[in-house]
Length: 282
Image (cartoon, rainbow, N blue to C red; front, top):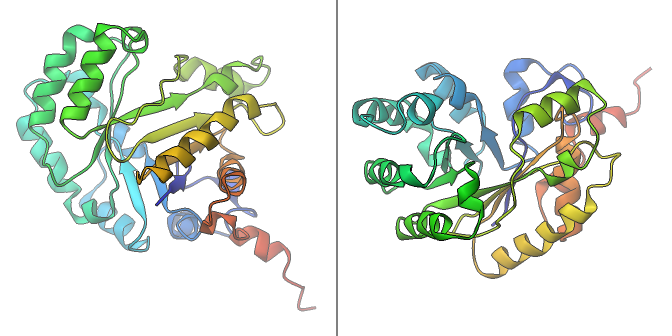
């Protein structure tokens, strides 16, 4: 099974293409889930939703849809993974109504989290319920040098069946930042080597480009081979597609399915596209 999606499920820029032209904010998730079977739940990184919001999200998507929420940044960036047991239990309880529709929970670690912090990560992992899948994204350069630090990280993740998340921003940084969206994206996104390794059975890739007008194919084509390899090995990849402003992210995700030759509902006409081709009544 291949899970494909975008970094968010709502955007006014998608009205008239992915969404119907008059789509309300409250309906965006359900329309999004008609075409994609997963999404990055980045919203949970910045703020905790209310219990009623969690239930609404769960009821807005079909049973085969999988969210990939992020642990709130207070665990990774403020508490530094220490003394988190009580807060972690409360956070997981908040999301319990939607865990059946959660493919994995992502832990995004800050750039300052280095090799010396791996014991903290190991301790944090020991607190996690085993019935949920997890992914970890690191941003310290030592974890991309194929040395002892990276080996230790990968071994820790493998031993605990946790996925190492790959974020590929090469196509984004290959373009001169000539627009506000590009400037903003290049300031916020990490610029690190790509180590596409599967440390568990649900490898995740986050692929970021500038836009569809700039050549991204040299960075994109290897992912077609890698994802096909993972599928052939019986793994369940999660692949998310970003553009600088995410306006064209749904189109990029659909193109990937087409180029991969994978039968996915993302290949069907989007809601707004079907609406545009309906004949006028008068």
